Image 1 (cartoon, helix red, strand yellow):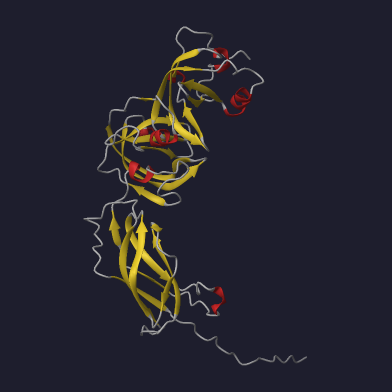
Image 2 (cartoon, rainbow, N blue to C red):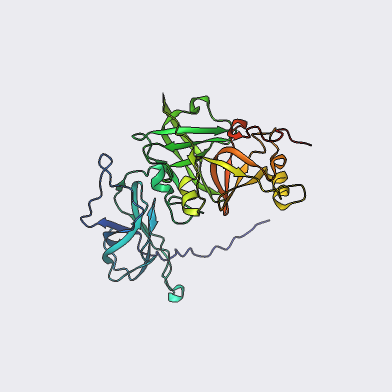
Length: 352
């Protein structure tokens, strides 16, 4: 049996231009790998010239909108650039660049989706603008306690020329503090290693390389999937910072740091059946008040012998812990049982 196939003539699709986009820095002092610009959270303008080219690399008289982007960093200017005649000169506003940072332009169609113009998806990128990587305080300092400057980025943190020390460890990670900055200046962060940290990163170890995905986990900053190095030396671990207030600005500046509450009180309402007590059974956290402040202490997995309900209505001489936030609630993570000083008051074993 003979089968005949009918073939229609192939009609190539019309090419959509521009194929290439040329992005030039107009005399901007872009720094270098050896002499980078300072990391900054403040927006500033970068002058650029944009030219559109066809598939052969010849000038193309493009009429339409292009979309600017910056990687890494944040674009602060308008998210569209309108070009006429295939060329545009002006400035884009950026902030939070680190390492080699580039400005991108892509043709993703016009700002007005009803224009009818098809996107070519042509793209172009500027030469690198070199910035220093941020210190811990540089990327942690923020007015919004539920985010930070580099949230979502795979970030390289400036530690090689700093004094960054491991201050505490737990089963799935550790905390570090840059002791070149003063306490309470956003100079600490939690490093999430997913499992017990390598013994090279014992408390007191100096960290000389730190990169990772900057995440806000329940509103606390952590670096996940980290790349780490230590030079084998040790540094003095800073003493716990004494808490005297608990405003969001102060606590955010202390996130990831070791702090102390002296003579805090466990409310006499912290008893079985109360809301805080039920939270303690679920999350291992209990309230501790001092002055007009209340913070929560997380000790359920690290101080198993301590039953806070046995101290309801009593003053605890001292509690130390690492600061984290859970969506508006400030929590002190107790690293081990010695972080809770009970003095001579009351029993120390859970009555269950």
